Image (tube, rainbow, N blue to C red; front, side, top):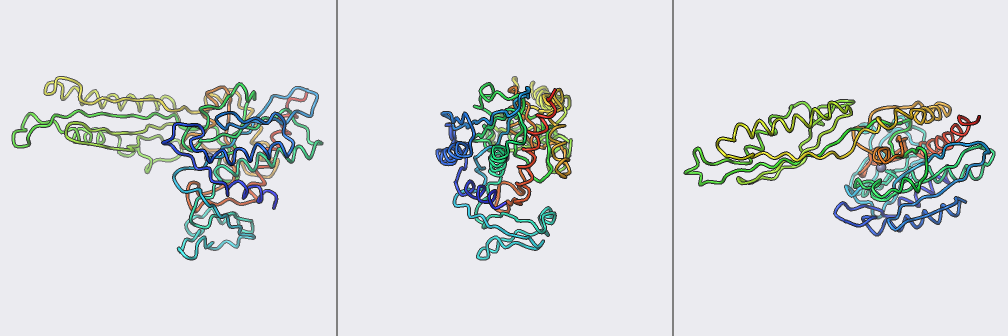
Length: 415
Ligand SMILES: [Zn+2]
């Protein structure tokens, strides 16, 4: 276990925060620091074909050690951390034999990680928790995933008696700004399917995510001196208000869960002459997703119709763009890839937690690029902030799951 902890600490102490305002890949030069370190480490543990391209995408191979044909499988994780919270100068704290009480992250600033608020902590009583010092995020998202993949490959190399097919490893930059899959060379990776090790608590196994669209609605107004405005002025901000009020009021993120989709207003700007509303549309169900987009278009059309006489041209312009789709569509036809992961967990005494993701993953983009890619737990909690923590035992279990998946895949395809 200490080996895994040391490895994890060696990753999280390197700052790899990504930057959505950058055009380059990786979006920040500092991501190269960890990328280069990972390349050396993959070579050191004995991986083959270790490559890093001009965008810092890392790939490596563990060759098959069986004679029969086994599909090539892959494991993917990202080494950047979110720009939502600082990832510089991470000082991990190791809490051994966690007693189920409060963990003081920072006495000076009175920052406490408490199970009275974060109830999930209680399931890790007696385990080793790795936390922050209260001033940074931890970076378990997704350096726990990297730790587990490297540790599993090292274990397989050191235990040739465990039989497996060819395994590919892929580490990406910029997942947190939605670009992790963008420059991923699926053909070069050459796997039949893969798993992202990027979920949260132990047992998580995910193969359904949202269908997603982004909408920019522009409202055109007409500015007239308010003293002479009757019958002439059109205040575009009031149009924006009318539009938002026409959306179903309970279908918002704060009032939905599970498979319930939503409309989510994420931004408004406005003046009398012009206003814009940005919103996102999310739904697991493809038909309902399409219906939500149609609903937005219909509201815009109805408003246009009611103002046409007065204004003479459309005053509400809805620009709807699809962002990503539910990977379920790509995973269901090859459902054995979920079955193998589920079986691996059961064999290791881990209760699988299969649930829909209320968001997207790199795996959903990869699935539509030809690499079906469910998501497996990496073990961390409270991502993207100072309360982030990961039990070392969960990282060990995730490592074991990777080894077991390799083993089960070789068995499944034996004769
Ligand atoms: Zn992640």
